[in-house]
Length: 381
Image (cartoon, rainbow, N blue to C red; front, side, top):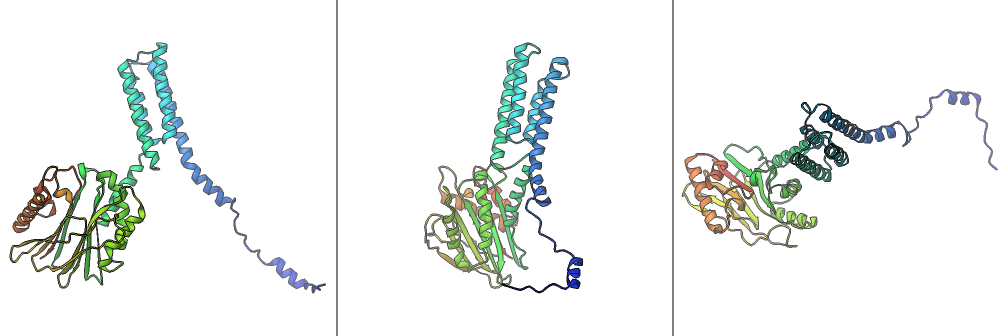
C-alpha cells in the first residue's frame, strides 16, 4: 500500500489560483469548422451561379413568349456562353438541359416560333460548351480564372530559360517559337552559372511531340533539368537527365538535348548532345564554320546506361556558338544536311553584317511554323 502525504492548504490554494494550461484545440473545433467551410465555399458558389443562370434562362424563356420582339433565342445562347466561363460540368449540364428543354417545349407547344436552324445552332452551342467545360474539369480547372493558371505555367517555363547575367564580353541571344504560335512549346532552354559564376551551362531540349501536347512535359522537365544543372559535374548532367526521364515511364517520354559548359574566363567550352542536331562554331578570325561532331549519344529516356561524346574547344574573341532544334533544319522531303547548311549560311550573314540576332536568323531560314523551333547564339565579343 502506498501512503500519500496530504497536500498543504497553501499549496492547494496556490494551485487553485494558478492559470490553467491551455488545451490543444480539438479536430472538430472552430479550426475544423473553418476548414470545412473553406472547402464548401467553391461548392456554394457553384450552386449559386448555377441557380442564377438557370433562373435567367427561365426568365428568358418567359420573355420569348411575352415579348418576342425584345427577347430572342440569342439570349439563351448568351447564357450558355456565360456558363462556359463560370460553371463546372454539373452546373453546365443542368443549364444546358434547361435551355434546350425550353427551346423544344416552346416550339412543340407553339407558344413561340423556333426555326430548325435556330434550334440547331442552340444545340451546337450547348454541345461545344459542355465539351469545353468537361475538358477543363478533367484538368481540375474552374471558371475563367483558370486561364490565369495556364498563363502562369507558361511564364514559369519561359522564366526557366532566362540566361543569367553575364560578364562583359559575353552575350547569349536565344529564341523559342512554338508550332502554329501556340502557348506552349516542346522546345525549352535552361541555364545556370556555377563555380562562383565562372562556368556557364546552357541546355537546349526538344521534347517529343510539339505545341500543347508537349507543353506539360516541357514544364516538368524544365524544372527538373534546371535543378540538375549546376548541381553535379558538367559531364554528369546528361546521364542524370536520362535517368530522370527513364523513371517517368512516359509512353512518349524521350527528348533530345544539347549541353554546353563554357569557362567565361578562358573561353574553353565543352559540348555534348543526346540525339540532337550538331552544334556549330563560327570562327571570327578565319571565317571558318565548324560543325561540332558529338554524334553517338542516344536520345534521352531510351537507353539505360548511355555514353555521351564530349567535344572540347575554345572560343576566341568574336567567335559564336550556335545551337538549334530540328524544327529549323528539317522539312518534309528535304535533306537535313541542306537545312543545316541553309541555317549556317543565314547565321553567318546575320552575324557578319550585325543585322540582328537569333530572331533574324530564324526569320531568314523560313522554316515554317509546323514544328517548334529554337535557336541559341553564344557570342564572345
